Length: 367
Ligand code: ATP
Ligand code: MG
Image (cartoon, rainbow, N blue to C red; front, side, top):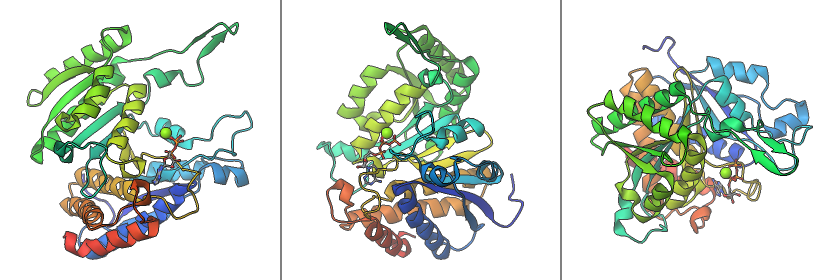
């Protein structure tokens, strides 16, 4: 695909709480990156309203005009949304990100986990430095399919439903193999592990069966399986052995928080929600009301999510100069962290502004 106009349109949804803070920092970094690495299409970023605080003033959490802008944009950059005291009239949480996921059919949740130098690591083993894996979570069905549809009977029994479809499993498995193929092309390990509970649930046995069928079509990539409980243990005991994993919605939700904890915290965990036509990039964390407005948020996950966006755009538009910019962001974060800028979240003294300033200052040497 070629780029039709000379710029790429990015719909920016800062949202609530620290989402707004890390997004403002990220836009600064993105424009500094464009100045440092000249060439390639510029990004045209447009800020759109959505989220709990916007709901409080307008009665709408995700206005049509914002959804429409997300549909038309080349990519969506997202902060975080939701706020404890602001809820829908029926008491439910305001989470427009789930509506966006469904509206844009963003079926693959991508969580790359990497160790960065200088971070206090919960793992003392020196091999923890080699942590570099990608967790892929199916996010349109699975156990979360039951959201709002569960049943409570006579205050005695409660039921939720796990829904696994052939089409849903096949597309997310295929996505995982394509991620592995790209990693292999970059000289990284490439094995795809299906994480399930096939020994207990019919739905999970089916997930594994469809995964195996897809694996057979990707002969160049090794495929294996793990039960989700065993995977939780492996993730803590020897995460450096992991490559690409694919799993159902709720298992993926739980494992991705565990994975973020491995590398220091939510502020180090970027993520992407990807479909066939659209993609949205956001830090894995929420709005963190406890630290919002205090300048304490760690913006690294937001920066690394923007790097994922540049990688995705680079591939989609066959534009290696966008990939150069993605590597530049990652290297600058790496340089900033390894030269003594330790975010407050990780036990240091660097607030959002300091981490941002040091990342931007590292850009010229990151080239
Ligand atoms: P969600 O429901 O959206 O997943 P959550 O309730 O799980 O949100 P988060 O906002 O993700 O909560 O974060 C949990 C806690 O981790 C926060 O309250 C905050 O203390 C800390 N935290 C999260 N993100 C960051 C960050 N970027 N920088 C510093 N601390 C963070
Ligand atoms: Mg959470």
